[in-house]
Each structure stands twice: as C-alpha cells, then as structure tokens.
Length: 162
Image 1 (cartoon, rainbow, N blue to C red):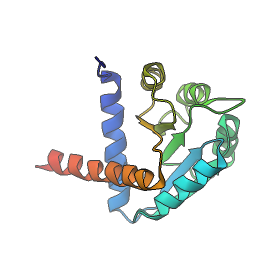
Image 2: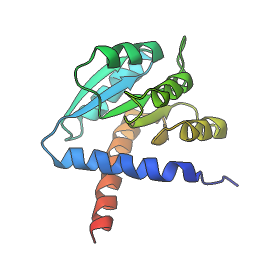
Image 3: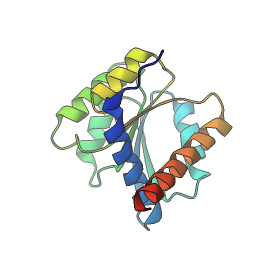
Image 4: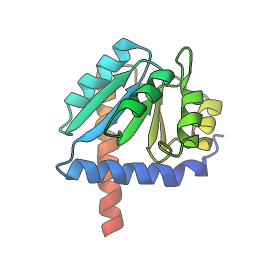
C-alpha cells in the first residue's frame, strides 16, 4: 500500500494558491522549465499556450543552466518546473541546491518527470518540491494535466472562501 507523504501537503497547497492568484490577476506567470529533452520542452510550451493563462516561459536544458538563468534574470520565476533525469546536474541535485540557496528557496518547484518511483517522489518532497507530477504519455494528457492543476487551484480557493 502506498503511504501518503504528509510533507507535500503544505507546499502543494501554497503552490495551488499561488497559481490561482496569478491566473485570476492580470499578472503574467513567470515560468522556468528545466528539461534536457527539447521535444518535451516544446510540448510543454505548446500545451501551456492552449490554456488561457498569461505566461512567460523560459526554458533551460539542465540543472547548471537553472542557476545561470536565475542569476542573470531580472525577474524571478513564479514557479520552476524541473525534470529529475538530466545529465551533468540532475533535477535532484538542482532541487537540493535551489532549496539551500537563500535567494531561490522561496520559489515553488514542481517536479515533472518520467519517473514515478517512490524514492523519487519521497526525495522530491523531502527536499522542498511543492508538487510531483509524472509526465503524461500524450500531448492531450499534458494539456489535461495543466487544466486539471488550474481547476484544482480554483476549487481549493473556492472551498477555503466558503
């Protein structure tokens, strides 16, 4: 039986609240996507375009590039979407370094990986990830996942306001 990881509840709720507040405002959501697979980055960008969310998507191909981008960028991202399985500096090491860095630790990190292993999920939440999602197998499912995430945000905030 799969144990529910209670370490994920608070960060996940905060992430959902943040995304909803951004989607209900006129603010453009600043997203940093780190994935070594150019096709996956392109698919994510296209799926995001199919939503009505105002966004600015910056893409990098690996963990080292995350820090280069963050240090050179004037605007911090509202969320970092991080793949785990990347060469040179993988997503696990990148996540640990992000959460240990006083300048970047407050940025929500969502793991989007082909892995669904218990170890990777637990590791990610234990090291500060706000959400762990397994990459869908189709473009349609990716669009649905993004829409579901935004819908959950809306329902959560509506429930809290009731």
